[in-house]
Amino acid sequence: MRLLLRQMNLNDIDQIFLLRSDPRVLHYLGRAPESSRETAKKYLHDIRELENNGEAITWGITVEKSNKVVGTICYWHLQPLHQRAEIGYALHPDHQGKGYMEEAMKAVLDYGFNTLHFHSIEADVDPNNLASIKLLLRNRFVKEAHFRENYFYNGNFFDTAVYTLLNPGE
Image 1 (spheres, rainbow, N blue to C red):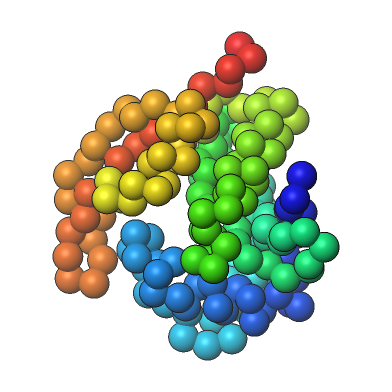
Image 2: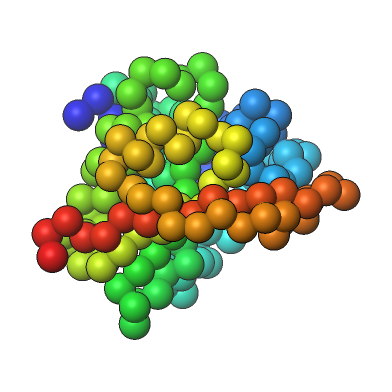
């Protein structure tokens, strides 16, 4: 594996700020860019709280012998009763197109199905985000829904496509 997936900490603030303030990363995510290192610090605090409450698990993605976070991948909306979670991910554009997210996703899916014993994993994406959809399809996700104008951001309504992967071992 060329990647290390690890818990993020305050030493990652600069990389998190770069990732979460880059308009290329945020293009399909429907959220405002981080405005400062302090908002990046708050994000780290918020994900730690979600983890402590059993609501999410977030990993920083680092590449080959570098401790620098170049992306994130997470499970959130954890639903233990239903053995289900939603997967989310982002990768800095300088590191896209190299297979890193494919590698990270395979590791996280394996963890979700074989360690956490999920029955299903959901991904909600912008239907125009073709790179993300191709990633999901390569990992055997199936499109289950297309919600029209169900997401409001910055004065506009956007569609959401829902993809799901059932545990292949069941």
